[in-house]
Length: 228
Image (cartoon, rainbow, N blue to C red; front, side, top):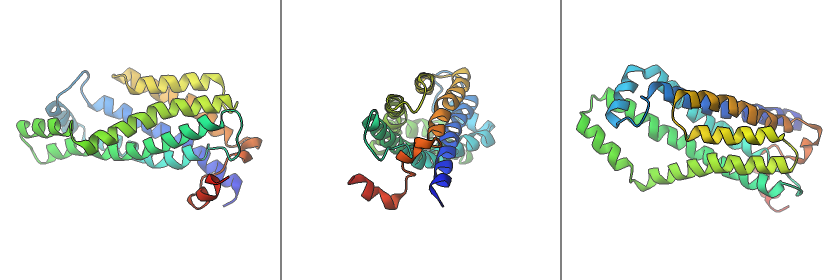
């Protein structure tokens, strides 16, 4: 696989990943009742929309895998304007993507299993309450939020400083982050649009002539890059 093909693959992943992430989140919003539903209400909704819930979970899981190589492909080989912010942001997004994959399993699976096991309401509530203070889950959520939200902002600030994306791409990623922390189907739809508007220019930057300064990330070359 030559550098051009690697760049095209990375560019495709950089579009498909955020799109899968936001579409999965949109499906979640469609299935889950609006407001602050209880664990019992979510379980009932999931039981009524099993296919949609499974699709939402799979899309979130897929996004977690795709965004790791896609984000790391944006790390510049050489220094220059915006290089440090781009590097830090890309690593944060990659870590957040791994956490997103873990979060998708930890969040989507239990509610489906509660329904399949016909668990009583008291058990569902007790387990859900206990999960809110379990250290492993809290760590996954923290890494997910910091990496995907804050990391995306840092990444696009770096890309803008390097003049690799237009200013409206940075505005779109702000909307993308804001929609992620806002409830409702409308915010979910806006998040899908914002993801496309933000990440398509970033993906196109990998296909530009000067994209030779950006490595197509490969685990076996990471060590050599880190010592440059």
